[in-house]
Image 1: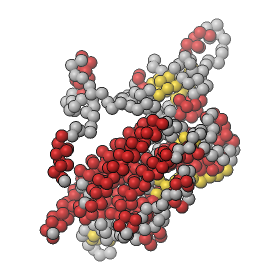
Image 2 (image 1 turned 120 degrees about the vertical axis):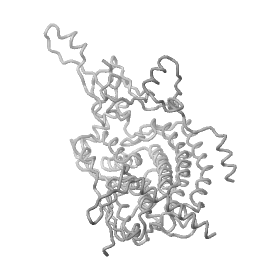
Image 3 (image 1 turned 90 degrees about the horizontal axis):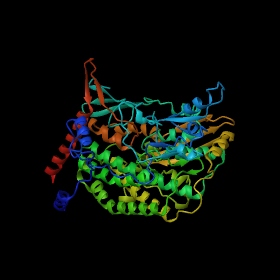
Image 4 (image 1 turned 90 degrees about the vertical axis):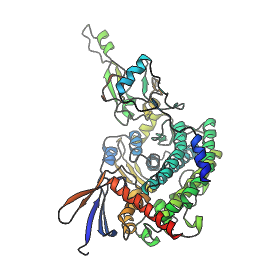
Length: 148
Length: 414
């Protein structure tokens, strides 16, 4: 009984997906350089299923700045900001108009619950399947949506 | 207490206890002669946030983070309490989807526990094998909800995601996989002499003690108390199914109320969960999944609502209770009280540990499946003031050594 089990395990492929490379690299930065040059190929990660909740995508042109997403965000990752373009366009003649609002999302605070996606009346927020978001700097450029 | 008694503090952070809690153990040689438990080592102010900062919709995701593994039971329990208070009741289809999610979580939690228990007694092959099996249910959860662990599926008055025909097929395939593999897990855990030696008659909690100390969940059921919220006060879809509490005598007709019985109860519950999921998928009623689709309107309704409500859910570790009181015109709750199952299951540690050995502390503590974070070390303070530490590695080594010793002795006697 045990003998067959051992034989079976000998010829079975490992369950683990060796991501990103088969063996742990001695020098991570060196590995990244090699990948960029095209010398090393990266094992792709396991595919995400449809409807996966990953990094948010934001369509800034569709957004009307209602602020509902900021109201329901459990982790306070969404901040309402003034739309810079709008202020410059309309305030040159000195008129003080209320600037329309846009949002800024801090991905490092996001808990990926997709509540903002559900509540958005203009459907300008979407969950992508991007999940490799680890970074040493929580205010890094790619962790703030929309980018600069 | 004689002069040979030493006092050993375990915790507040300990990997075997998985929870910030302190145990003061008095030992005489190897035998434990006195145990004291100190709770409330971790206070995160979750209830305060719910009562002062968040609105009810934000609270669902806060409740999800009370415990990483029970991330369906806590929001499930909370939304039940809010529904009770506000009168927004979920449609039937949502009840069934909630039951499916709760049972998927039970399978994943019990398999995780079984793996940890095997690791605590130094049986790492079984640990890896069990966790490889658990991967299937994690993939299923990821497919159904969009994430492996935090499901974010609960909403006041329903659920947020529907189960499609494709999803039903995937669930059925997954459940078939578990039915096929169940015989093997049963064989490994229940017929293996090593596991039996390390867990039989260890950490006994008598039926009287279980009733007196209000033990809940698999711990109480392993002591012969047929206590299950799904059976006693059925909620949601469980009322249609008719769950029966599992006690170890349904397996072999005898109750020892020890760690081995807890393994039996949890493994049989995995099988029971598989049955419930199969039944729920077959009988999934059609219809809407939310009582109030418009979230903004729901938020206003909850702001206007007034009253109090209680939610009760059978979490993988036992009965979970949330009490919520809503006030008119205010977003945060007026009052929110959580009673997690581990709270009840901590005091039974005292009768379970008395008379045991230090090497049994990890497995006995783990047998109640306490649900917290990991521990780093145990500090041992000598009475003369000389201080040294027992590390996690040392304790684990003691546990592994005991297993080997028992196996050697067993071989000699046969």
